[in-house]
Image (tube, rainbow, N blue to C red; front, side):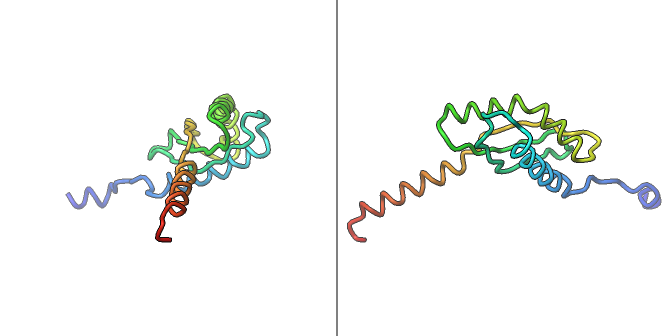
Length: 130
């Protein structure tokens, strides 16, 4: 048993590869969105995070968009229409055997933080002991 394991070691996937790949994808996509994507709907988009599946086949890209709900929907539609271009750009910029499928998601974390700050400020103003 032991001899077999010594002769045929199990190859495990690198543990940190998805995180490293996510950082590279975020950096590359942010650069492409800023310089190469000409769609005006994508003007005020900020990439807030990227999560890559363990096998590297899918990447969830979280984006933050300042503006109304219509502007956010429009920005997501612009990103969806630029998905093929961005994936091709990733293939050229990063030497990967297969480029992950891109999935854009609206990140509302910033909105929640602003709302919490607003509520805390209101509580502080209405508190008679302060």
